[in-house]
Each structure stands twice: as C-alpha cells, then as structure tokens.
Length: 123
Image 1 (cartoon, one colour):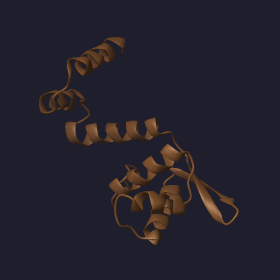
Image 2 (cartoon, one colour):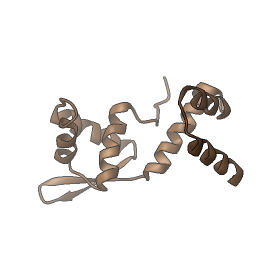
Image 3 (cartoon, one colour):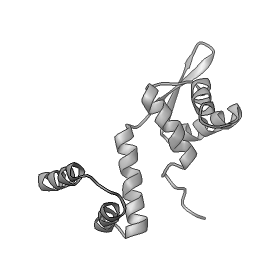
Image 4 (cartoon, one colour):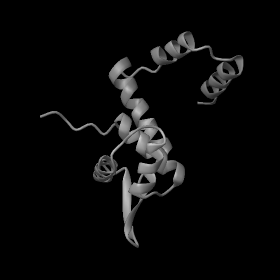
C-alpha cells in the first residue's frame, strides 16, 4: 500500500492559504472566499477541511453554532516542507538544479539575484 502523502494538494493548499490569511475561519468563511474564485460545493469545502484537520494542518473548536478552524502549523513550516519534498522528488534532493531553472526560466531582476546571493552568503 502506498504511503499517504503529507504534501498538500492544490485544493488543500488553496483552503490553507485562506485560513492562514484570516488566522481563523469557519467552513462558510472558506466556502464564500472560494466562491469568489470558482464554483465549489459547500460539502466539498467541509470535507476538505475535515481532511486537513485529520492530517494535522487545522484545529477546530466549537463556537456558537459552527466550528472555527485555525492553522495547526505555521505557513512557513508547511511551505518549507512542500518545497523540500518537491526538491527531493524532482531533483534528487539537490536545490541547485531548481535554482538554475528559476534563474534561466524567469526574468529575475538584478535586485532579486542580489537577494539570492545575499541569502547564500548569510547561510
């Protein structure tokens, strides 16, 4: 049996971004935010948030008539883990080919390149 991935799916990440931005949200809050972008069913959002809670990305508490969800992990930590997973899977753990690709494929400004160099010198 395949090991269950801890990396967020596209839909899960979309939901987490909303909750991180708001710091707490109900299913209805997330549903309405998603509706501004695309059509989605309320029950789908509810199911996805329940899955995110089971995976350890969200916590919930009862507040009046609805559950309020808060992030269980900071955004920076989750994104960092996703990037590490991506680098491991795609580039066999080496970040250099990723950086080369980004520099070659995206028109990075001199300021962005200098910031990368500064961060490199710092570590």
